[in-house]
Length: 408
Image 1: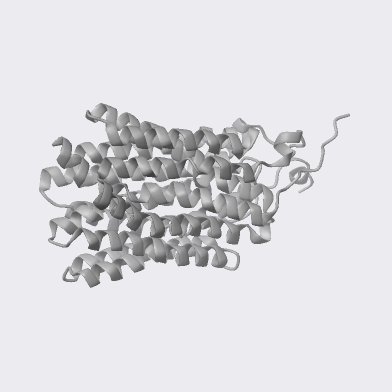
Image 2: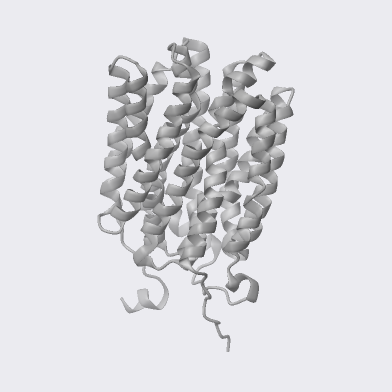
């Protein structure tokens, strides 16, 4: 007869502090990559599409790698995955600094950093939260982790702009590499005893069974479709907004402040989303967020452009920026349970990253062919309306399996 040792959890405070700091560094660094678009393309005489393609590859690799990073984290724990991701992040930033050809730039900025982000961001961290935080506080805890990533943007983007102006683009990336290495010791705080002692959580499904169930479940498909739109919108804006503003005659400082404001207000937005997700249906909150994004972009394009219109737009978009993250992942956890949460979050995030790939790449591609970003802005508006409609039918009901299902 087999026996199961009770699952050993680590404290919620420890999970949130260590996980929040890791997400702060990982997301904070990548949110500022748009600041390097013009310095790198001008120094190498590359087109904007070259830079955009590398970032697009990064987002796609991030999405694909997130699935496998989630599988490994669910099976062996997050600690090893995060340490490996931190090392790859450092190597990717060094390669980004010294790449002399578009191929090397894409391999370092796109492939290495993409894999690194898969091991140091939400899918892996949310798996730890799901296993160690009770269901009645899970959405709130995920909101805290998302807010940490937002604070990272608020903290790191102005810092990165200052590093570029004072040290230069290459040296600034080396400094960020040293900061990324700090994620490795922080990962020690996320070593779950159950993965080191063998007292693993009992699973009623294999990986393939869990994956087959989710991919054939309509609500999972709807959440993936909505997350696709989220990726398209936020990565297009995050990467191309600085260049859009400079093309319109605004100073680089306006772009830095705009990205920082997005990060600041995102702290509030993600925390509020996590809180509201404990009390209100997540599908309605998600629909509202996507529709509000579409409205914010439409108003921004309709009004005369000025620093103040940029700052107001950034504050509104910041409130809505990553507020989809805790709601979407908490919905997945509620429907399917937490045994395979990192993997399922990785699959949902893969859809997000396909959208990110298209958003950032189309931004550069259509800019080079039309001389502006207008077409991509309009696509972002239409997709926001579509995502709002898609999320409304999501069913937030836990799936019953095994003996409980037979009794029913």
